[in-house]
Length: 133
Picture 1 (cartoon, rainbow, N blue to C red):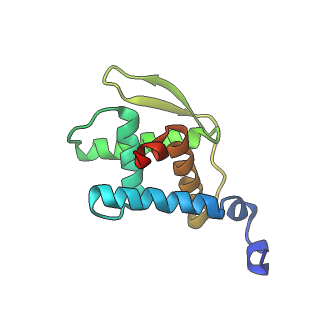
Picture 2 (cartoon, helix red, strand yellow):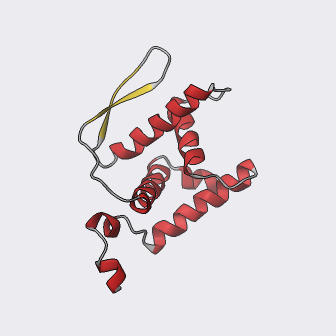
Picture 3 (tube, helix red, strand yellow):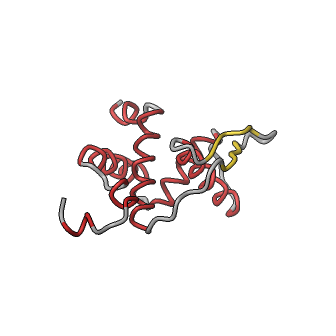
């Protein structure tokens, strides 16, 4: 570890990406770029996960797109125990409840946390196998 890395807060070190996770992350980004014709940013990836969680493929209004990104974020953070699924409403939308507050972290740590959780989501849902098919 470099001196620079040891001077960073623990949250920074915790969410540094190892080589295997980086490779899986770039595989996801590359596959989505191939599928949609442009490289997705984190919001685009969250939107895609939100649509997957909702299970409805249709045109969405602007506020629904924001809601889909929120659903995805809650789903991903549920892996670390910050949110818990509570129910699906009558329109099929999943709902989550915050269980504990997220600790403060810098933007890079937040981004890396989400990248790790996106990789975990792909693994848990067999999406890497679907990419190979």
